[in-house]
Length: 307
Image (cartoon, rainbow, N blue to C red):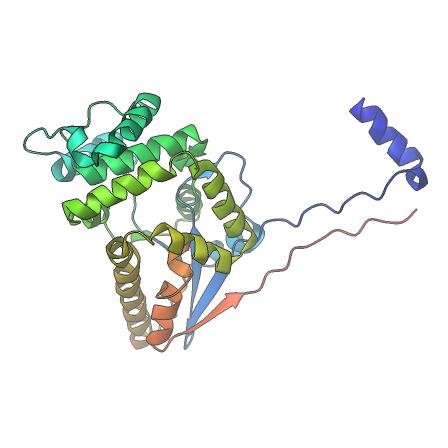
């Protein structure tokens, strides 16, 4: 029936209603940092995406192919066996602590329902922050998100194909230490926020990915800021402090390139939330006297020929 209707529309276009134009192709935002002859590309990433997300557009591919190295937040080992010792070192408690002690009494039924649905296994031997991340990751998988097809694995594979070095701004252990350094009160607040957002997470992530794909950084910043409203300490540790350190690292690399008279062509991919809103990596770079401009990429539309 669909093929028949399509055929009729082609035969008698005057009788068919005007078709809506196809949506523009996705154009995730890129920025360029310039300092003398050096030119660095900044790209906001999404660590986990739904299958079929079309984001690796020509302007991103071209920018990466023109780079002399790929810089990411961290490089996750391919082997699960290499990851577990680090997780156990930081997240494992010396003695079991009941899960019920981690949430207020009124939240315990919410916790139980989430645990029954997501099946994380016994959590009494782990820190509260690890319980929160476990629930969030299991919910992401249930929502159809897959970290194996996130932005970083695709960028890494392309870089390896091009024989580009892959550099990490942080080790995986450093990233987990940020959570482990939180007070128990902040860890419990993180867990409550996770539990509260589980059911709406799929819709919220869909909107965030849509903002990212369309390059709508203002909307993306608003969503990221909303996520940290209940925990300013978490925002400072996970966003603001890291942005400042990364900006210093980039500025130092540019200084080294200038002294060596060898232009830098780094492609830097960090979480999209780090490139949006106040105290972003972009603002931190500008504070250090660097010029940061967004690359304007217009969707290309093909014009149909008239008959």
